[in-house]
Every structure is written in C-alpha cells, then in structure tokens.
Length: 212
Image (cartoon, rainbow, N blue to C red):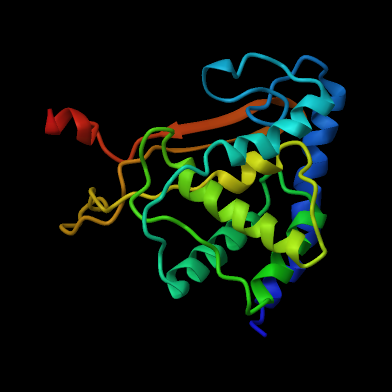
C-alpha cells in the first residue's frame, strides 16, 4: 500500500475543527452567506440555500463540471495532484468534514486508485474542471469500494477548489516564469469579527489583456 504521511493523520482534529467552526458560525448568524456552502455559485452567490438544498448542491456542482474529454495526466502526476490536494486540506480552513478527510487518506493509500484528471482543461467554467474530475474519481472509488460518502454542505466546493494553470509569471526578482495568472483567493469566518477575505492577482495586468 501507499503510506500517507503521519502529519496528515495528525491533522484530522484540525480539519474537524475547521468544519465545526463554519457550522457554529452559521448557527450564530442566520443570514450569513458562505460561498458554495449555503449559497449557489457564480453570480447567484447571494441566493441562500436551505440545509437540504445546500447539501444536494454539492454533488450537482461536481457532476456539472465533469465535462472535459482531454487526455488525462499520467498516473504519477495524478497521484502527486492528489497528495497536494490532501496536503492543502490537512492545513485546515477548508469545508471538509473529518469523515471525508479520513476517506481521502484511505483512497490515497489504496494502490488501485488512480484519478482521471484532464490536462489543459481550464476553459468554459474555469479551473474547477480538473478539480471536479478529481473529486468524481474519489467519490466513485469510494462507492465502488463499498465506502460511499454522501457529501455534506461545503464539501463539494472544497473538493473542486484547485487550479490548473501554465507558468506565466516569474516570482518577484526572478527571471523564469513559475506562477500561473489565476487569482489567489481564500476566505474564512472569524468568531469575533467579519470574515477575512483575500482575493489577489499574481500579476499587475491580466495575461488576456496583454495578448489582446
């Protein structure tokens, strides 16, 4: 079997605490909106969903973005992407329950699991397409193994939150392109204040504007 790093297992409580913090925040703030957790996505993010609808929305969000027919990354790259995604989630701050995090660790250690992640698929709906394919591979593998996981609120959004961008921008002071031009964005609620939201670009000018 593949062995997950011990640090991932130790992160379980941090992952659980992050998810529970969101639930507590919403319980204490009835009208609070958290993108993709209790709202629709895109330009409908001001539309609040009830618990049942928000839960059902998670699977639909993934399924409606599994639309690429491009060639998949090879097995090694796909597993590296899986490791990077689990590492991201293990840091906390994501809307993934402890149960799903445990399932992800089991999937990673299962040598029969190789996710199908399409190459060059940042188009149409944006960068969620590779993430949606990865998430669908994970969920299908769990179901086939008799360990089906019913997504909770926010989990679908957390699973597809990944980007796929070719290098276009050098780091500050560098000469070789390293970063993509996708924006870097994240947000999290605070107990005693408004949410912290960061939304930044890696470049001064969008690549598309330069090309045009």
